[in-house]
Image (cartoon, rainbow, N blue to C red; front, side):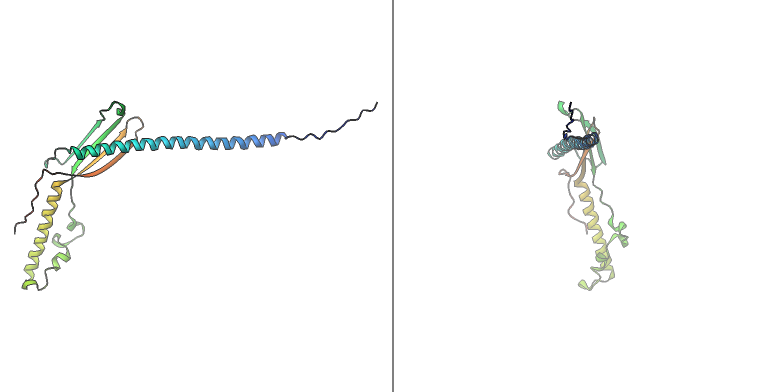
Length: 192
């Protein structure tokens, strides 16, 4: 009996090669699913920011159409409310309205008598034969005009800020603007 064993050339993957392929596949699938999860999360956050921004713009537009009653006694107003729409019940907004306050730039820049050097020196020449008292008078006039301008601007310009917050996620968005008080009278003449 002739038993001859024929050796067949079988080719296949070894166990090591299969394990390496499965590890690489698992690594790439994990990276892909993680990046997709971040994309979905970022998309939801972007969508929420857009909704918050639209709600802020809506409230700012309502302020322009129906401004609050300005009172000079009132230094500021701050109120927090929820939206009246049923589908927006998980959003609340905070409205802050306050008077504009202009800083005293003369004190900030250390100017003498709250008048700029240009203002003091602008009239120190021989303009209509004025002496040093004339430049002091003109510097005082400059200060009086700027003080009156500052008072008028502070009367008619108010600052407004709207912050919309999602009560569930605690994300918020803010917008700020200037409101004009058209009911206030402006003093245009300066007494000499």
